[in-house]
Length: 130
Image (tube, rainbow, N blue to C red; front, side, top):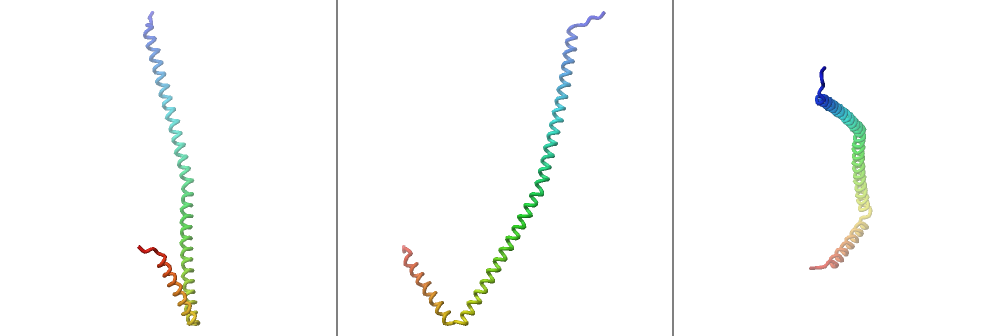
C-alpha cells in the first residue's frame, strides 16, 4: 500500500489551481484582445464611412464655390462693361450738346467754374491757419 503524502496532494492541487487560473487569465486576455480588435475594426469602418460620405459633400461644396466665384467675376466684368458704355454715351452726348449749343456750353462751364472757385474760397477761409 502506498501512502500519499498530504503535502504533495496540496502541492498538486495548488499547481492545478495555478494552471487553471493561468489558463483563465490567458482566455480572458485573448477575449479582451478579440473585443478590442472588433471595436477598432468597427471604429475604422465608421471613419471610412464618414470619409466616404464627406468627400462628395466637400467636392460639391468646392464646385459650388468655384461656380459662384466664376459667376461673380462675370457679373463684375459685365457691370464694368456697362459703366464703360454709359461713360462713352455721356461723353458723346456732351460733345453733341457742345456742338449744338456752344454758347450755352460755355455759359454752363463758366457757372460751374465760378461755383467751384466760391467753394474753394469758403473752404480756404474756414480752415484754421497755424
